[in-house]
Every structure is written in structure tokens, then in C-alpha cells.
Image 1 (cartoon, rainbow, N blue to C red):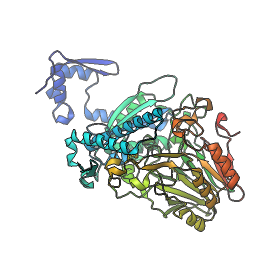
Image 2 (image 1 turned 180 degrees about the horizontal axis):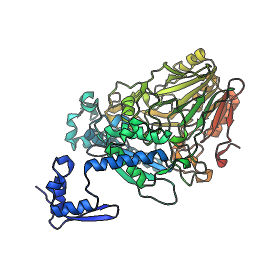
Image 3 (image 1 turned 120 degrees about the horizontal axis):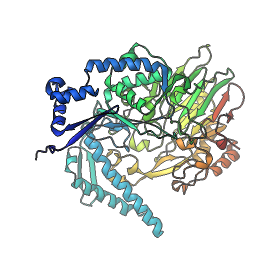
Image 4 (image 1 turned 60 degrees about the vertical axis):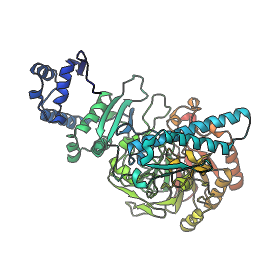
Length: 607
């Protein structure tokens, strides 16, 4: 059935207070004359409509618009900086937006229809298991795994029966026993060498200010992101060269800048928060500063590297404001441990420096796995390098001293052995002083870990004893089928194993004590726990988020952190420190490690 607009329909166009109302016929004429039709506006539009649009400024010669906009931004940008309150949200679009449950480093290279459909049965499974667990708790009975496994297989089979459009990607049948058999037809049918989501929706607003400014959204081609990020780099560091000025001719860049300006996202350059200088004390080998969740700033020998950086916008409720990208100063390199959203924050990627080397784990060859290097290049990073386990990066000190070395270390846990994604821990070394960034790693469901696999022993043999470990203390497990939205389609997990127990940061006390014993470290810094709410005063802690020390539901069966702290001290004489924003670990060239709490918000300082 063909549809048409009712002839009495009216459409209103607004620009800077000027308003033009169009009839349905005039709207159709305007649509037919838009630039993508190749027809001339002045020849296609009724003369009266063209006059009204031209007089209001809504229709302007294209060349004039480009020149005026470019000149305007070339004049304005050297005088302004991004407001620290500016909040950015980013979604990828095709026919529909990529689901927020799917990491873009995976979803961006999948057929949009498959990505949308495949996440649906996984969501049904999660809801069903939650209800089943609640029913067991209420009735005081053990969780019936066999019955639950039959239930969720029936749910998926019923879903597949009603979605025959999945048959081109998925083959399945019920065995004689009733068990479900399911597989992808081939990896080639659900992977693409190029992105399948060609558009990006950017939303800008001022977060946490007393005066609320409505958010502004713009949609730009994915291919325009490198130009957008080059201009963001210019705003961050105050350098405007010929290439960046050339980027201002791009209509996508102009729309982004216009949206930022519309929400008062620019401030005078003189009002920008100051750069936080890189620690340069010759007596200090390394400093590691925690900036919320897994975001770390590492300084050593005049170099600054970022690990899993997450940039939080300012908020008037915060007790101590987070660092924004413009305060980071000169960054030498950026390292990501893995692709999970709390370690690779997509919105932060827009304002981080894009011309420095960026290091990521080597991509896995398994299907439905992240393509981190390709994704970061799409996001505008010009020098992305994969770092395999055992490979290292070294920045040489300008004075000829020991350089800051970063070695990629095998990452166990987080379901990595079941899912197959690439992930790295990192060993930091300078002047014979060593720190392990253990991130979310821990023993996996097969019992393998940095300890049991002998990796830590080899590191100590090569580098010498460690002085500190940064890692999670969580003891969280989940069902294998809930590791990711695509887990039930993974070739590594047949349906009869969907309810196998697997780890998510499962770091029990026995493992952590053994980790500290073999490493020889004097401090375990518990981090990768808690995001923006860590900047709130201690009295504002949000009970719905698993921040260290909170009694949240998921911690019901965990070993309390106070017990772990006591055990580490009793057995290893090692301190457990709960990391909070601006806590700085100071590791001198000679002497003992210390913690600098001077910049931490008063309510969060150690007693």
C-alpha cells in the first residue's frame, strides 16, 4: 500500500528565531530539491517558497555556507577550550542503533540485523535465570541446574522457530534426547572486514551543572570521525595547524562544533582547568595515579602513559573534580587491557590524544570477537599497535637514564578462556622497580592463572621481585551463557555447557595471597571498581553499584575486603589499599613504596 501525506499537513522550519511554515506540497517540493537529489533549489522550488526560505537564511548558496562556517570556526577555536562539564555520548547507527549491550569493537563488524536479533535470546536467558534464582531463594531450595538448562534451551529453540530470518546465519535442531544443537553456519557469514554501521550519533550536553541545557544530537558519517578527532585534539592541546583548519571545511565537523556551541560547551581558553604536570623527580622511578575505575596515569622518566583511560565530565556534586583530557598534558602512549566497556570507554575516545602510539592486545581469530585495532583506527587513532604477550614497549628518558618499559603479560579470567578474546595485563618497569597491572584478571574456569601457569614466576625471574600489584579483589562468577550477548552462538560453548560456572574477576583470597607471595610485592592496590560515583563525597555512595566496601547483592557470598586485608598482612606483611581517585603510588629508585593521599578528596582519604 502506497502512503502519502495528508494535504492539510503543515511543517515548520526554525532557524535562529525565524520560522517558515510549509504545506505538504511545499515540503515535498523542498525534499525533491535537496542537494542529494542533484536538482537546483532555485529552479525546483516555487518562487514564493524559495523567497521565504532565502530571506530567513534557511537557504543559502552552498559555497557561501562552507566559507562562512570555516572562517567562523578558524577564528573561534584558537580562543576556546572544551568545557570540563561537557558530556559526550556516542552511538553507532545502521538501520537501527547498535545495542548498548554489545561492545562496538565487536558489533561494528557484524551484520546489523544479526547483531540486533542475536542479542534477543541472550536477553531472554538472562531474565529467565534471574527469575529462577529468585524463585529458589524464596523457596529455600538449591538451584536446579538440569531443569534450568532444559528451560533455557527450550526458550532459545522457541525463539529460533519464530525467527526464520536467522536461518542464513544459524543452523540448529533438537536431538532425539530433546537437547538443542546450535551453531553458526560459518564465521564468514557474520563477520566483515569493514564496518557495517556507517553512521555515528553524537549527543552533547553539560553534565552536573546547576543550569540545565538540553542535549544536542548530530549524526555524522563514521568516516568523518578522524577529522572530528583531529579538531578535538586541537581543542585539547591548543595547536591549530593547516590540516586541522582543513578539517573545518568538513560539514560533519561543522555540525559537531555547532552542537557543542549550542549547549555552551566552549569556554574561554584562559578558563580551562590547568594541566597536571608529569611527575619528574629524579629520585622516583614510577608513580601510578588512580583516576577512577580502571583508569591509571603512569609517570616515569619524564614520560606519561595512560592505561584504560576513562574521562569523566565534571559535576557540581563531586567533592573533587576528575581530570579531563585537556589536563593530561603530553602523553607518550596509551594502553588498553581488553575491550570491555569499563576499560574501553567509547565516549572518552573522542577527546583523548589521537596521535600517540596506542597499544592493544592481539586480536583473536575466533568468531564474534573484538577487533580492537581496527575499531580504534575508525575512532581516529593514527598509530595503533598490537602487543603480543612477551612483547614490550620502551620510552627512552631524554637524559639517557633507564627508560619506562611496558611488557604485555598473559591475561587469565573474565571468561577469556571460554570466549577467546585478546587481553593483556602489563608489567611496568623502570630503574629496576616493577609494578604489575593485573586489571580484571584472575583464575579462569579451568583453574589457570598468572600463578598456576608459571607466568608470574618467569616475570620475577627475568625482572626481579615486584613492588606492587594493581588488580581487582572481586570474587564474582556467572553462568557461561551470560558472558556476552553472543555467547550462546560461540563455537567454544555447546548448549549442554551453557550453565557451566565461569569467572568474572574471581579473585579469592587464596589466589591473591599466592600472587603476593610469588611476586614479592609489598602492596596490593584494589582498583577497577567504581566509576563516576567515586568522585562523590563518601556520604553519597550509591548502593546499586559494586564499589569496594559496599554491601550490594552481588557481594552476598564474597569474602569481605577487611578479612582479605588482615590475611595479607598476617601472612605476607603486604598492605591492601583500596584505590580512590587521585591516590598516587610513589615508587622511589631506592627505598620503600609510599602512598600519597594529599590530592584525594577529604572524605575518601585513608584514616
